[in-house]
Image 1: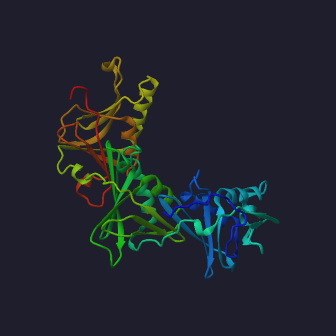
Image 2: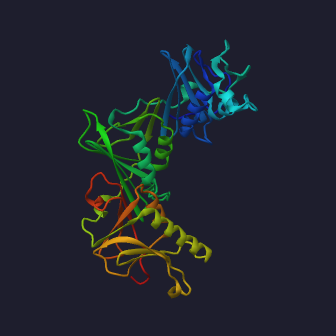
Image 3: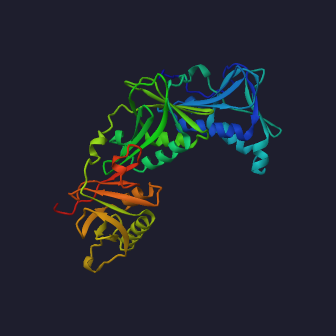
Amino acid sequence: MTAITDTRANQHAPAARLAFTTTRATLVDALTTVGLAVLKRPAVPLLGGALLQAANGQFTVSATDHDAAVTVRVPGTVHTGGTLLLDHAEITKLLGALVKGARKRDADALPLTVRTLDDGTPVVELGGYTMPVTAYPVEDYPPIQAPAPTLAQVDRAALARDLARVMVAVGNEPTIPMLAGINLEIEPGTVTLAGTDRYRLAVAPIAAVSSAHAAASARALVPGSVFAAVVKRFTGDRVRIGLDNPDDPATVALTCETVTVSLRTLTHQFPPYRQLIPETVAGLVHTDRAALLAATRRAAAVLDAKKQAGHPVGLTISGDSVSVTPLVNDHADAVTAPVQEATVAGITDGTLIRFHPTYLADALGSFTGDSVTLHVQANTNRPVLLTDPADGRSDPAAFLHLLMPIRESGN
């Protein structure tokens, strides 16, 4: 990033003449979206700016920080081309203050014009008001790079759903940055998302349409929280995904209708997670997912009532049933829990597996089917794989969640 030395806000910063009209709701939505890439407490004030550009009949709002660049194409009428760098927080608050007390529906529909006066002062015209807005020197703002070429397209709803499922397993330890990332793999016909915090792993393959020039395989590690936040702002049907360099990507581009986002990749290596997925298992437990999730939450609530929150719950497999028991410290032998029907194969009667209650609930909650299958290894201290169908372990299109049990003391 180019060094910036001018830290002064300037309401009369030189800028090309600009005049653009849209509705209040449209500009507010664009400012909210690009706000994902605006530093909240910038060391240099202009890094808290939003870049407004009108050219060739199109109007865009952009912003960039160290991790992301976001651009939104805004529908409306371009009267005069030009560029302005406005204080993002100020203009966002102004668009609320100038309609304070009005019904939201009426306020959103109001025409809004952003333009520069003859002396170069940028103003907002809304609801009969004309109000100057703080501007910064455009030439000092970091350039917004063109997005990387598209390698694949995926369904937006599928991406949002599966990203949320994977984010359950993403870590947040600042000392281990690779565990705060989403591992993005692009292969012919598939985009795979993976995330882990060392105690759980989630993997979601998404059907994709690959570009003709796409490489056989490419991958990148992007900040999980930023990735999830920008996808929530998408509203179109399809998301285009691109890498600036498939062999060693520095940025990942995501484009959905009028919104384009470029994310800086993490330089760390994601763990080789595929070797953690068991090729063979000792047995299977297939049961009602909602009932097992409810039992897990009840067991967690009991532990909380006993002031033992964070203690493990015990998943007990017996015959054709399964139960979840709060493993309390006192009078443990007196504790019983209701059982639910299950289809069990290859597992010794009375097998007990200990789990962190929040992690087990998160894992079960990340699935969407009526039932869930647990793939249990011979050593019950080894990770348990959860899938929707019984054959999910061998299904390349299946969502996978791998959960590490809590070892019994002394094992």
